Length: 279
Image 1 (spheres, rainbow, N blue to C red):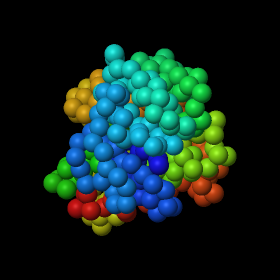
Image 2 (cartoon, helix red, strand yellow):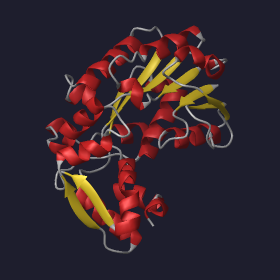
Image 3 (cartoon, helix red, strand yellow):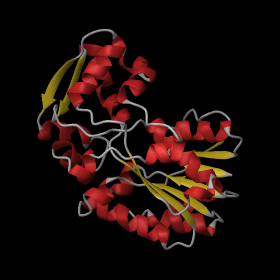
């Protein structure tokens, strides 16, 4: 049995589907009742209360750990989840970390994630760590304005990073959960090329077949929108990267191809698969 947290999200759903398609037994965990991917058992549980994970972890051999937003906030202790998993008999944990742990190790949320990585390494469990950069699916923040106004509003319009398709993260995670060759590995996951928000708007226009204009937000305007769904510290850390990426954050990593044997998908690929959200 493999437990997938965040199982109804942009990474967890395709991961669950990939594992089920490969013949694995899967327990899909989400905080709220939702339509879970077909083929797996669904359990509602809150990662902020690890003691309540007993039902989800029962009989599990592996865990994909994706932290909910509140577990990035000050005072959270996600290491409790690792301890609970070990106590339940889980032997392997694949942790979704962040590239910022390596590129900006002194940001508040990065320090906490590094501590969680270290705790996992010291746990005695088998492990693999995934460090993606920005996600193509963050473009869904623009879905409403694209549908209503054919407009993308974002900060730093001409500054890009090599964002990754969450489906690629899911496929790498699936490999790490079932293949011993990936144990003890830390994979940095990016897309195939640097792409700016303005270029993303153009890619959306291409798949929609109609113009999409770009409106540049100030940093303050962008943060005001982001804090509705994430801690302020995480919003600031994210905006620091988007405004002034370091050479390490601009680097296109070979790790997706190393694991999957193919190049990562482009933003245009992601947009074409998700065009219905923007129509």
